[in-house]
Image 1: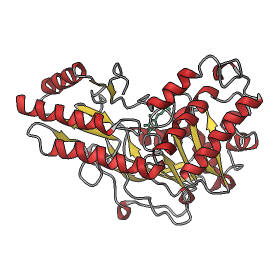
Image 2 (image 1 turned 60 degrees about the horizontal axis):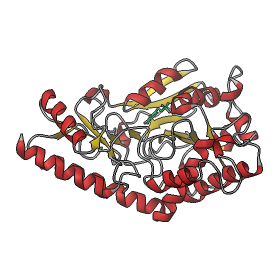
Image 3 (image 1 turned 120 degrees about the vertical axis):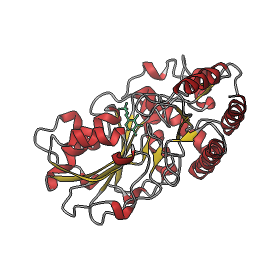
Image 4 (image 1 turned 180 degrees about the vertical axis):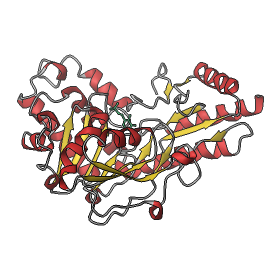
Amino acid sequence: MNDQRVYNFSAGPSMLPLSALERAGAEITNYRGSGMSVMEMSHRSKVFLQIFEETQSKLRRIMGVPEGYQILFLQTGASGQFSMIPLNLIGKTGRADYAVTGNFSNLAYQEAQKYGQIHLAASSADRDHSYIPRQDQLELDPRASYFYYCANNTIYGTEWDYVPETGDVPLVCDMSSNILSAPVDVSRYGILYAGAQKNMAPAGLTVVIIRKELAGHELPYTPLMMNYQTMIDKDSMYNTPPCWCIYMLGLTLDWVEEQGGIPEMARRKQLRSSMLYDTLDSSRLFHCHAEKGSRSGMNVTFRTDSPELDAKFAQEATDAGFVNLKGHRKVGGMRASIYNAMPVEGVEKLCDFIKKFDRNN
Ligand SMILES: *Cc1c(COP(=O)(O)O)cnc(C)c1O
């Protein structure tokens, strides 16, 4: 690793693969002989259209996106999907099911209430979102237009280890913080989406993968720019797409493929997270927020019994080159976000640091 770079445990925007950054750096003033940067070229130019199409097809290949699904590159932010989903899908029956397992699914649940009858199909609020409800705890409404959940709870550090079974009701899933980290059977979903800034690219791009037949039934007052059908018809180019972020996503996907694809990302995820949880579980001082069986492989939330000691830990960690470990204010303590681009070695060194801190305090 480039020696001035720190191990950055930020929840997002977060680390990107070094090779992607270096490639972007090398191409920053003159993209492959075009005489200009990707930031400076028309989104309708031949050279950019090639970047766009290649990025789309790389993602399709790497995630195994089946025919009948469109990959959209939007600018809404993941939070924009909280509105776009009900606007486009709820018209079918006027009802939808939501599983609230953390901050972002709760925001999506609140927002959806503007547009229809929203049913709380499950909630983990009773134990401060420290667990994921099991299939038999989901209260499913067979008349729901869709079932919504968030696959990985970035703030609380929990992750669904199963895909909910909802019969004929389409699944809609926020995968912002775990997309590309493990194999996903896209055919089980109506829509899956992710803000790019956790595991894919810089902030500004939202990737939506949608079963095309679900589009075209939007509520009549749906803003043009929030209509999936508009974006499908124009292949995400109704207006200027987030060109630079799409290019960066392409570079990240090249890295994913060179490393061995999603199976290798999943292997490293398992390695990093089990190492970190084992270290925390065998410490005297630290405990994890998430219950065993629900723990996230991407965001590890932990703390000591003392806020002062937590602050001391975060400070000493920063001084030692492990940055952005302070937890989100909703949970307190610490959070280590260990996305795809975090080297296994970064987590090994963090574990050594945790062990040392545990002995000395
Ligand atoms: C970060 C995050 C969001 C919010 O993303 P924005 O692009 O900032 O709107 C939503 N859902 C999850 C799971 C996230 O991690």
